[in-house]
Amino acid sequence: MPSIQRRSFLEALGATASVALAGCSTLTDRSDDLPAGSLTFRSDHDVPHELGLEVLDVGTSLGDRENGHETVVGTPDIPVSERDLTTTVMVEPDETRTYESVLRSPVWYDIRFTIDDDYPGEDLARTVIYPDRRGEDHLWQRLEGRVSEAGELSWAVASTDNPGPF
Image (tube, rainbow, N blue to C red; front, side, top):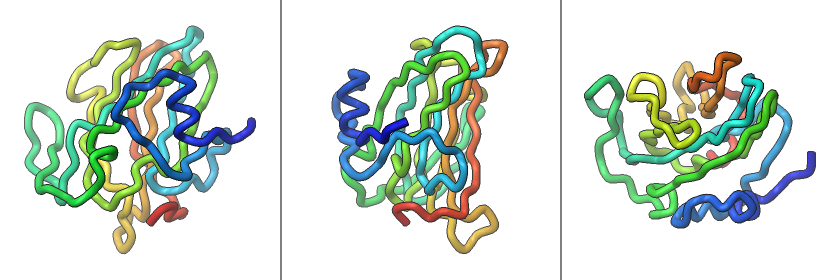
């Protein structure tokens, strides 16, 4: 599968304005050794689904657990485009789409996923991620949103040995 620049990807999919994912992120079909901050959308269901991701907040540290999810606190100095990151992707049955190095700053991201414009709730579709975990047991991190064979949304934060933009 040929690589597509992140900006081209968003334009082609009609993603929400104010995303401004400028940079070198590419669409890839490989799953091994993905760089930190990468985002993968995957569907194991037998019908297409629209998966969305929204950065709700960014912070300098992990906050308290509230309403069933972790929070972030502090005000990091990062571009507005990374604070307001929002995108939607149509994923076909048995398809995986990976976008490398989407989360590019060493900050905590408060993330919400949607499936077919529906938000399944705090415990099923919301997480925090700090992609630059060097020096810790988790190494660097990447994020995945997926649809199960039953059509249910889930997410995962995975470790990687590839530091990507960090």
